[in-house]
Image (tube, rainbow, N blue to C red):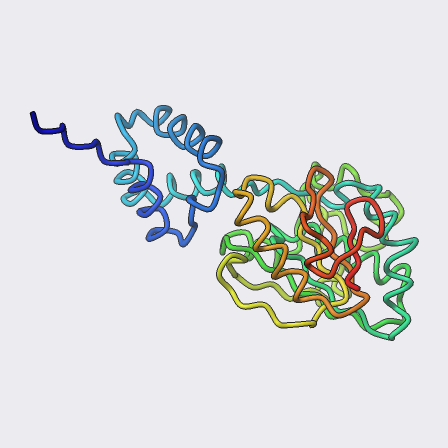
Length: 263
């Protein structure tokens, strides 16, 4: 008796279609979590299956944008995780400023809140150091927002009032980066899993709340490449729910909670 033909893996086919549409590879994320979310989105839009949902996304740019907003985890805010920023201000930035220049990278910068927070902090605690600040994100729509330097009142809810008023201007319901702050970061579209990283180029790399949905091999490979982008003595900062595995093999050592130093 011949075996029944295997049912095609519609999730893998869907992921391939999303990659063609938006250059986002969902197969790099933990399948269980991501697949449940994707099937839930499809059901809410009345699609009987993932391939029908893919067809809908390909024909309706607004629905594709809505889908990307939900799966690329564009959650950020100014001074997110204030304890980390306090640590950077008191310990890390003054040390790095000793060379007269701070080269920093916000890897997975979303709409720029992290990069502008770092810019404001550097200008406040290390004004004598020249700042070279880069922000990278896979989502072109987020990069466009980041370049505008505009943030909602909710984005500013954790920001220290004095620094917020010093470095941002209130315009209606928004906070807008002051001109002298807005010129500091440069933003670009880039896929951290595929783009090339310069070796030993940075004093500080922030990659926070970016890898939590990646598979472990993908996460570890990215951390290895980020470590390679640091110069000796540079720092890698990860999110407060994340960890870097095999630090010794990567040439890293724990310096502070969720902060690693390149040996």
